[in-house]
Length: 328
Ligand code: SF4
Image 1: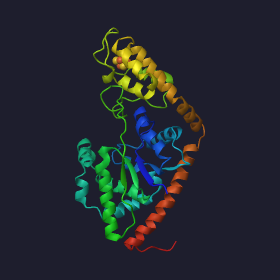
Image 2 (image 1 turned 120 degrees about the horizontal axis):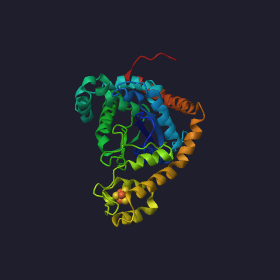
Image 3 (image 1 turned 180 degrees about the horizontal axis):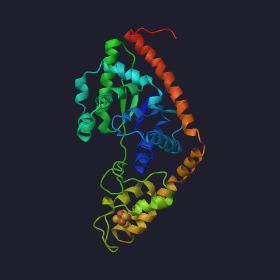
Image 4 (image 1 turned 90 degrees about the vertical axis):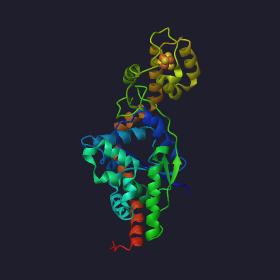
């Protein structure tokens, strides 16, 4: 039987090229190897959101992008965290076996306290407990993580281990599937592409918008005149060509070094490559978007399937904890 993968993603609205080349493509390929459960973690998002005005739209746009990019509900379960309320229940029960000292030493908690000192809410410190509940509720065995997320997963393993040793075995200890996501720099050429840095290109953007955005990107700063020879290895446009124009990368590098190509033409070429690579995605997205209830139907089906698993787990949990259960 295929191992079960669990992965959660904050609702960030329309996805950008960095999301596409990293997370989305990875999730699409995992669907064929594992029993995948993908969850939009809207409750986690509440720990840092200042307001929820755009939350529903962000979930819709993100899910639409994911479905158009190849996430297949026939191969995985795709749902929204809050649609399966048992996760909140397991979170509470896990909080009883989690020492506060474990949570206070989590580096990301300390960072968040610095970033939002005005909003150090209880959810922020309990975040790893909710994450453990997310994974354990569906008996996730494998969790794709970047190296920086390994400490979080280790905490999940500790919580699960503590529960199993206190009350009896219920949960597998999830293993990390170390995944190296490509570093996609933003249009500023300095920081990782991110909505927070406003340096991104949305994958659903029309070709003219992609061209407009690519033309604003920073290139090799030493190349000030058309006749200056360039250094493709330090140019972000070149790094994007590696993803979107793979058949011509060597040629582009050599033409840049000899100044046979200028940055304007090089950028136009990149914009065309991005647009043509994403054309099938845009077409599929437009078709899916034209079906008014498509996204909500997929999410409702995902929630039903996830909740069926969650109910089985919670029955086991309560049996082991000797909580008094009424016959249903
Ligand atoms: Fe970058 Fe292309 Fe300009 Fe070279 S020609 S510096 S690779 S944009």
